[in-house]
Amino acid sequence: MAIQRDFYLRQLIDRQWNGQVKIITGIRRCGKSFLLNVLFRDYLVKNGTPENCILSIELDQLKNLRYRNPLELAAYARGWAEANPEARHFLFVDEIQLSERVPNPALPSGASITFYDALNDLRSLPNLDVYVTGSNSKLLSNDIATEFRGRGDPIRLHPLSFAEYYAAIGGGDKQVALHDYLTYGGMPKRLEFKDDEERVAYLSNLITEIYLRDIVERNRLAHPELLERILHLLCSTIGSLTNPKRIADTLTSVSGKGGHHSPTTVQSYLTALENAFCFSKSLRYDIKGNTYLAYPAKYYCEDLGLRNAALGFRQLEEPHLMENAVYNELRRQGFSVDVGVVEERRDGKRVSREIDFVANLGNRRLYVQSAYAMPTEEKRFAENRPLELVRDDFPKIVVRNDFVGVRNDERGIRNVALTDFLLDAGAFLA
Image (cartoon, rainbow, N blue to C red):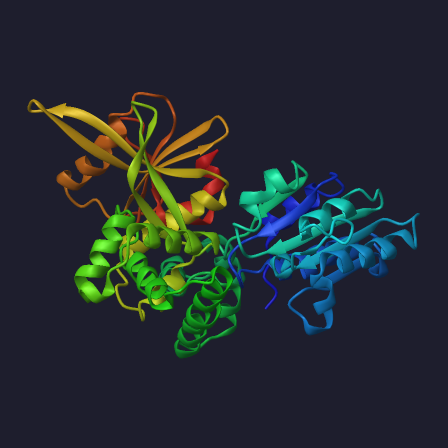
């Protein structure tokens, strides 16, 4: 099934020949290779680029093992581009994180060559535009500024959004589609399976055979069972405040002293899960004080299908899944997302209230509440009061699943139906 990813394809089109290495990052199996080697390639060919001016090197293929050596990769690509200096060439390197660090033959004293050196060298060729994919944020996103010296241009790819998923299945009943999306998520290949058992098997295999194994091997983790337990705990408590000490204490209380691990160890495993794009962390932000609070924080799953598979498709509470879906859509739109904290005095006491999401992008800010339903005055007060306490003029939105359409209340708070928000988030976030 060919799924269009126009939101990301446009980013690649707009970045052509900008003098930087375009780096597509994201969780494994979310469609990075398809975006680059199918959708973008097709676009280039349709717009006049000859096929022989596009070189694709997939480092996870046995035939390309030699190009995991960055010196071999650079020499091969340079020779290919220089053989026809009058033509414009495009280089695609898939799974760049598999590239090896090798000794620098010019400096035998222990210096080494990495793929950053190779790509920076290739970037200097005037007739070569370079694109790579990779599925480890530590290897790519966190190092771009220093290693590429400002010459790397990252593009973060996520699993299918609800809008992409809905278009891919051809539309239909929105609530039925939403339920399916919240259950099985947006990993593109899962759409090839019509049977629920096949979907479950596919997603479960991704968790155990791809993500957990890859994270353990890549990070040389000494306790694979601890990684799995942390994964399950985070999945079962999405949207809940936590920190490494709380997680360590919880795991110890469940397994006894024999299962004790320090908060420092837990933090390193949390970092490994974040670096593999399995989870994102949302920090607490004091809105009136304009300061971040150190702990605790919230963790959200990159894909709900993977989250549900990790838990054996138990704990399918739609309010929590909805909150995670709203968070993911804000991130997909490019916003950084924090948990808002605002205080008021009530009956002589300080009362701390929470806004689910404070979303920032440049000079834009939005305050967003995720409310599955607001059937009572008490529930409406709980959701609206934190937004009312914020005195600035930035938009305030409550995303709900208990009505259809969009409406503004007398306080200027916009109430948006969940399906409308997920299908056209850009219209509400502008």
